[in-house]
Amino acid sequence: MFQEIIAQIDYSFSSPYLATVLGITSIAATLSWRWWKQKNRYNSLQSLPSPPKYWLLGNLPQILAAVKQKKFFLQLFHWSQQLGPMYVVWNGSYPIVVLTKVKVIEDTIINGMRDGSLIRPELLRQAWNDMAGHIMIGETGNEWQWRRKAWNPEFSSSGLSKYLQVISQACEQVIETLKEAVPPKEVEVDPLFVELTMRVISCLVLGIPVDRKSTSDEGSPLEVSKAYEAMSIVGYRFLRQATGEKRWMKYFPTKNSRDYWAARGYLEEFLTPRVDLALQMREQNQSNLLQVSPLFRESMLVKIAAKEPKYNRETLIAECLELLIAGTDTTAHTLSFAVGELSLNPRVFQQAQDIVDQVWQSFGCINAENIKELAYISAILKETLRLYSVASGSTSLQTQRDTVISGKVIPAHTGVSWSMLAAGRDPQVYTNPEVFLPERWLDKSKDTSLPMIHFGSGPHRCLGEHLSMLEGTLMLALLLRYFDWELVKGRSSLEELQQNLLIYPSDKMPVRFRLRNWA
Image (cartoon, rainbow, N blue to C red):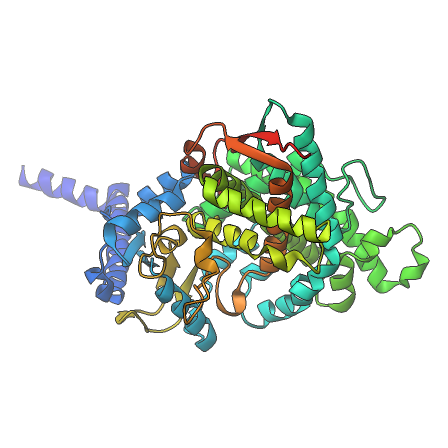
């Protein structure tokens, strides 16, 4: 009997069973060692508050569930309300410190980017560059600097002044659409503003006419609904990857992957002819290309291709796609939220309308000289951004070395993010933070102006800030000049929000417009 037992043991240790046991043990030991190493590296962060974690997975299940429900920004906001001004979220074993105080966010970003203690994390850079190719926001150091230097002049306040006529034409198209819809038809304003902003950015960057009825010979026409759907799919792919989805998963035969490749293919097909033509113009005498329209000759694409030889076909296509996405959703959704808040705040609405009427009575129109008279309209946009920061939860940095934030030592290789929705409601900075009060941005009695961090801070501040404010101010002014309005669904339109890459009203903000008596 004893010999039989020994024989069975010998067989067990010489069979595939042993290899399986050893394999599982090896994997378990490796995972345990990595977990122990990570735990010790980030041990100092254990004292920070954190949402309830899953073993090994940390908060990844909650993060992925929130992204799937398109509520990631709201998850960060709720955690901020529960856990306080600084807390840590665990993406598996990787920690992300989340900040919610305006001054702390601003100082951390500016100082960290200046002294090199904070950079864009590799995961986020890969996610940006994986959308369509290497782009400005996905680069650091010299690769970021030469791109930013090339585009800065085009998006400066002085550089954009020559585009006021283009922006005005696009806004007037919106007004004509609304005139045709009243009364009593309801209008979903978010898609209307998406068309506005996409036509403007496509004209500025690609030289496509803003007039819906006009076409150009440089490439296929702009189909706003198709382009926007494709941009939304590509943007949502970024958000999934930035919050934990692996890069290689886009090659799986899933619906998400098929949608992504179809969307990317459509956008590249739309952009490629114009990029190829711009590069051809760089290599040849532009005067020999008689078929090129004046609008395309003056486009940012042609100018950048001509002055920056480091750009090639692939990187220009990717950069143009980045600018189309960034220049569409941000301003469009902000305008929707501004229209909603104005509807629910009659005092602000009436004051804004009176100011617009005064400018019209004095000048007969809005132009580059008198747009500064609309500071209150610009303040409405800033107040809207404070409460509805459309980019909340989509950006973060990473510590390069041990870094002190608010007296707490944050270890090297830790993610640093922020909830702009929470920061916009910081009572230490914004008095009565839940009240829609544009006047707070015009208060000259204070020693210092309010921090406006919703376009970012430091050298990486949003490239399109001036364009967004110019577009938004002019569009709101024209709406106030011609219409009164009300929200069809009331405050729920401002509360039922979702996030693709950016935050947007899930019901598309239905509004009922009434043409003013004088009009």
